[in-house]
Every structure is written in structure tokens, then in C-alpha cells.
Image: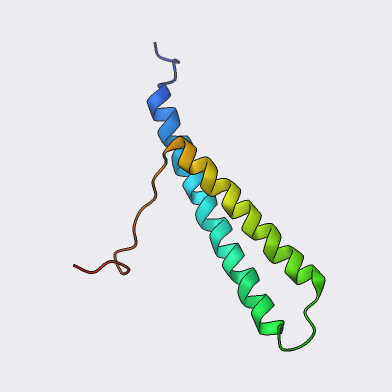
Amino acid sequence: MLFKNDPQRMRKIGNRQLMQLIYVTKDSWNQARETEQAVYEGHVDSELTDRTKLQECKYMYLYQWARKRKAHGHLNDGVIQH
């Protein structure tokens, strides 16, 4: 009993780590989009476009995985005002 893992606790830990990864990936995707838009005035390198698309795909994959697991993140208090 001492070394037995609690499945619900392990699922909560996994969901928390998944949400952290989603937040990091979303930030990375936003940064890649901003970089691509900043360089858009010149000739956009295909590497920048590919990097942005890759970050978007990573985010969408993690987002779908979180929805399957029914994981929920935290709302930013500054976004919703009562």
C-alpha cells in the first residue's frame, strides 16, 4: 500500500504537466508568428514559415490530446471581467 500509485493522483499530475507543455508550446507558436510577421516586409524565408507551421502543429496536437483527457487549464483573471 505504501508504494502503490494512486491512479487519480497520477492522472492529475499528467494533466498538469500536459497543460504546462501546452502553455509553453503556445508561447513558442506566438513568438514564431510574430517573428514571421516582423520579417514579412522582406522576403520571408521558408524556414520561418516551416517553423511557424511546426509550432502550430505541435500546439494543435497537444490541444487535441488534452481534450481527449478532459484536462482543463486555468483562466487568466485579466481576460474575464465580471
